[in-house]
Length: 330
Ligand code: NDP
Image (cartoon, rainbow, N blue to C red):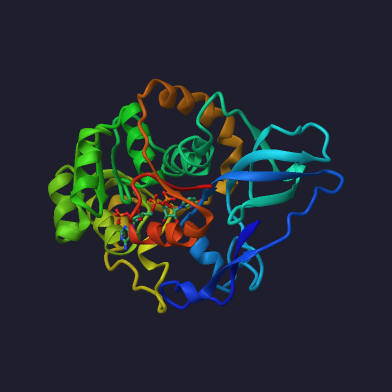
């Protein structure tokens, strides 16, 4: 079984020398464990943080050991009650072909109810991130105008569509290519969208949201955040989900220059972590599951094949190669 190890902590953009794909023995499950043959692996921006030694909300990856990440696969050996050979599970033993894991860390999923990969994306962690961040952290309500950055990505595409389905007055998205912008408007039903690489974010946002924004869902940070503060309406809310524009910085990025605008607008800016919102999971599945099944909420996945391409897929997320959730298929 092959698995990816972190060899050294990347400085700036991760380099291939920081990682190695190594051969490891398949360990049979001990009492209470299952052996899973992984079918789909998740690569996510937050993994960049775990490659650094800095203290954060999850422990850094250990050097010389296999990295972790979301994965779904089929149980091929079981020494645990309640999980049988042939069952499919969602778990955290990613970046490897086979994973021996405690059954308590595995959640059974139904491959007949939805495609397996969706448990990593539209019906999984990134979906719940969109749902919780928009509805709880940003206190979205009907009639709000919503701006979301990273809008063609896994989280962002779902934020915009949930806002539309729940009665947003206007949904605006930004993304890094003209094709992605087209997708947002033509397929996902955004009212306006722009390519942040085509010019000033502040100017493009002013044009796209002439009446301002009530909610900004931030996936990017930097000039996007500053532009959104500039367009924030009275009682506006900013949910800080991610700041992908700074993840590879070696120096702290400067903050927004216009924070004083939060005084005039009585604006609120608040960060959140999806891990704190799993109490919403049943409600999320109940509400969003049928939208996905009916096609009312659309999603894309960018699927990269082969464990040997796991690292490239991860780097691809940081570069913007993906449209929707980036998935590695084994
Ligand atoms: P995405 O599917 O959105 O992939 C990341 C995207 O970020 C890329 O496709 C790229 O798209 C865009 N991007 C990369 N660099 C930049 C840049 N410099 N400026 C603007 N956009 C950039 O990933 P996810 O949906 O998984 O995650 C989205 C955000 O949500 C991330 O910031 C992530 O860290 C955060 N997150 C936070 C969670 C939480 O609990 N708080 C949980 C899950 C995710 P493009 O082509 O448009 O540039």
